[in-house]
Image (tube, rainbow, N blue to C red; front, top):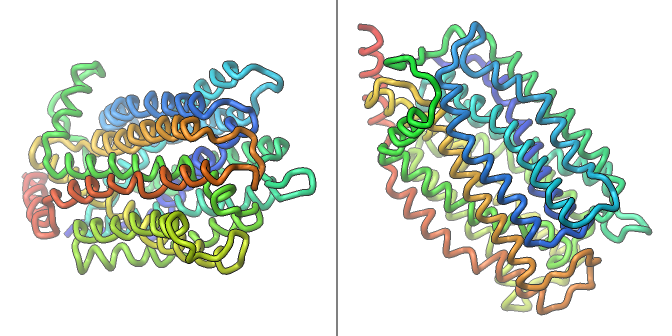
Length: 476
């Protein structure tokens, strides 16, 4: 029977997800708004810069995965890369939000590309080995879901909880600033706090999982081989020969495009479409955090009784509906309360709670399914490829995000969204177009997501057969 991880190792692995949660929270909530509305860089240029950063990051994912898979040190394959990325990642985040003042638009465009690429690169060098480590440590079908539940819990705490703290501490509404995010003085201390959080998270993860190194399965690569483009191409194509892997990566790619476009407009929607002040916006994070414990508990229960594939499909439907229903009601009816009312805030938070219930459970289930595929790959190829498998998963995540970010930035310019606009200064026509793009126009992508996930084939019975065959092979 596969070994079940002790609680301390699950906690050590999980706390490492804080680093990604904090970094992605900084990117998704603050970065586009900062460069577009504070530094006055056009939406198109900002979107292109962030898209370039994501694309550069995405193409390094397989490289990081391949290196991590074949790295041999006394500290294992994953830990040296994880710890080595901590300090450079923190420095990159600080630089990103502290450019020189009084420079040109093209200077800020170049600054954004440089340090967004740097931050994304060092996040990759940490995150890919971290994900692969989880698949190596957890070898039981259901225990994998539990392990990634810890990971998702801390990741959501990092993004949602950190966002709440930052909005409260550094971006309050004042007489001078009608919306706290327009206060340029908040971004310096905010970025320093983010960098410290990232470094501490990674350090705790490395320290908390070192004890698992003797229990990790061997790499089992048939022949040693230097890193080169041919090897990298062969390893990636080998992974993509797996049908279930292609279905998961394809569905994830479409999901990230959908959520990325909606995420690009998220702050604009809250500030201008829904008329939320900072004091109301900051409750979004705690609402997500309130849903998080239920989501973490829900994922193992659903995957146990419904299996992972049906769980993934059902929760994806919930997310698609929650992200569109309120917007459509506001656009096409007069049923909703007025902006600024307590009733509207309560309704928005209820939908955010529901999304917060489904979203983490989706990622927990997905990561657990990718870990299952690593077993199937070992059976088919004789080699463990956790790094490559999770790197291509991450590639789909980032490539889809790059595409969505570029589209989102262009969309802001197409609807002629004004730069530096205060709440109440944007025309009704522009707000209507913003709602269309952020909501119903993108929901058709949801059909493609569901089609891919329906094509996934591995179930609990098949994974049990695979693990029995692997155990017999290793015993020989």
